[in-house]
Length: 93
Image (cartoon, rainbow, N blue to C red; front, side, top):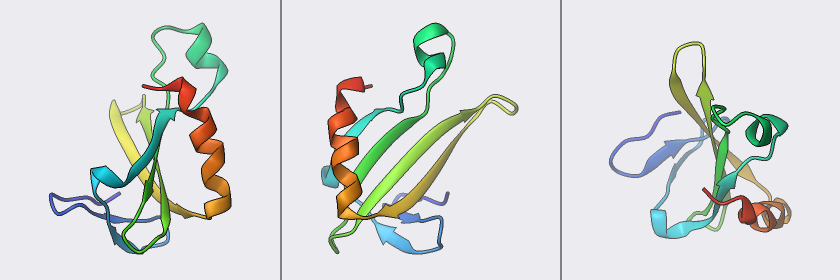
């Protein structure tokens, strides 16, 4: 992941996009059994953005237990995939 103060991100496929927090459509926790069973577990989270060019961008942030860091990836997704994340928002952060 590469992000700087300009709001530019680089996707998994190497494409550079500018995002703005106001373009955020959804944010939530990715469902998993550990999240419900272990209170010390740090779950992965997601955000879905709509870019100025009309593309949908999925941001996934996960905790790496081996080196105690957060790892964030960005992926362009099809419009048809967006509703699944919108419906999952009841798992809000």
